Image (cartoon, rainbow, N blue to C red):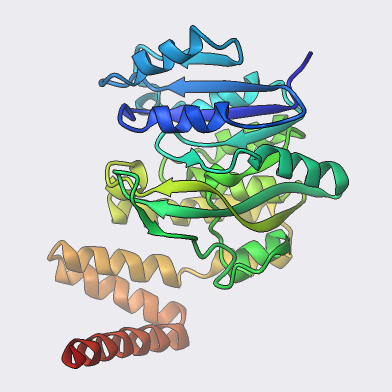
Amino acid sequence: MNPVVSICCITYNHEPYIRDAIEGFLMQKTTFPIEILIFDDASTDGTQEIIKSYAENDPQIKTFLQKENQWSKGKYGLRDWLFPASKGKYIALCEGDDYWTDPYKLQKQVDFLEAHKDVFAVVTNSSVCDLNGKTIQKERLVIPKDNKEGRYSLYDFFERGNSYPSATLLFRNKNMTYILKESKRMANPFLGDWILWVLLHLQGDFYFLNQVTAAYRINPNSITHTVNAIERWKADFTIRKQLIEILPTEYHKFLKSNFNAYFKISMAYRKNGNIIKFSVFQAKAFLSSPNHYVKTYINILSSKINKKHNYRKY
């Protein structure tokens, strides 16, 4: 019998955390079969040994354990291994340092998509924890700032905020040929999740269930936290130009605004002590959106005043 859900997990040097991820998969209570696909990108710690120990005792688990690091060669676990191998009607994501906390997560999401054929994906809320699993936030601000449960289009994604906890995502395994082709064309190690959200949103609307079903672990060693900020925002320029080529004109206004990228790059140069380039990109930020520039500095000043006031109170 084919699985209804393919769980896709990518991992690298997650020895202290991978058990939590796998246990979260195995605790799922469902009325349908699942498969668990785990890609390890040549970890140098004991991650692969832990994965093997689970796979040996559970036929649901299929492993893709690399002997050489593929990310360094421009290949990606989800795009090049797990998505093509997924046999399920639906695909769920969870990286090796995150984990699921609700044993009915998959059942709730599948039931929703079965009842709402015009929705392409379901995301939920998540808690936030540190490396030791200690809860930092009971829930994240996901869509956009208010966590309002409901349906969200690609337009909403751009306009109201573009952050989903990837460990909560479940989407239909449809049009993957197109999604894989475009993700390969726009491949970028710094913006992988964001590109995927856009490509999935092009297939249909998302629905946000405001229930905590997973824990997002803040890992300072992840690519998101270790990547050079300047490289990250320069990559942002390239990706937005590529997206303009495939997106309808109604979305172009979101992609043509360079203010955030210019401003973030300038602040990264200031942190590095490069005052000349800091000034150049500050000027570019101002010229791209004078109103946004002024509002940003008003907010920064206001935040500093409030912090100073709160400090004096105590």
